[in-house]
Image (cartoon, rainbow, N blue to C red; front, side, top):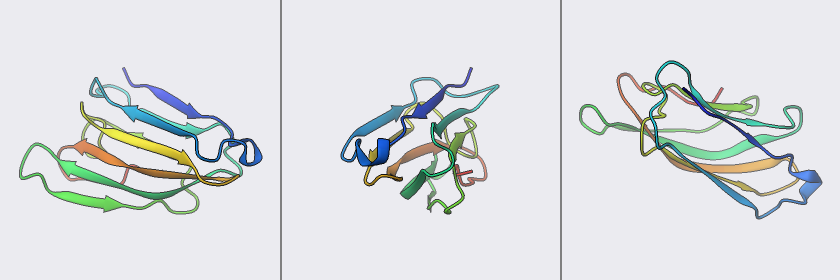
Amino acid sequence: DGAIVTLPDSGGGGLVGQTFEFVCTATATSNSHKVIFSDTTNEKFIGRLTAIDTDTDNTQLVYVPATANKAIVMNGTTTGGKIGTRVKFTATSATQWFVEGIANGSGVLATMFS
């Protein structure tokens, strides 16, 4: 349980404009779904993710990545990763990936950037 998706190295800008989308078709239970970089030294996320609390009142919180964030971790509850979570990544430069999406979660929501 739990999928790990590795974004390709942006190739010094060779992937600018390329888009990848991660869609949860199974909720993470014993492990987390993760999206990581192949180049953990130079790559970074920009953009934002909206987390929605799907078990109560559909509370929505928006999270933005810090410069040091090198992964998105969705545990199936508080950090998203339930069925229907959708995250899109677009290479915007030699070292940046623009991230946008909806992370379906439950409980006390928390950032999925780590």
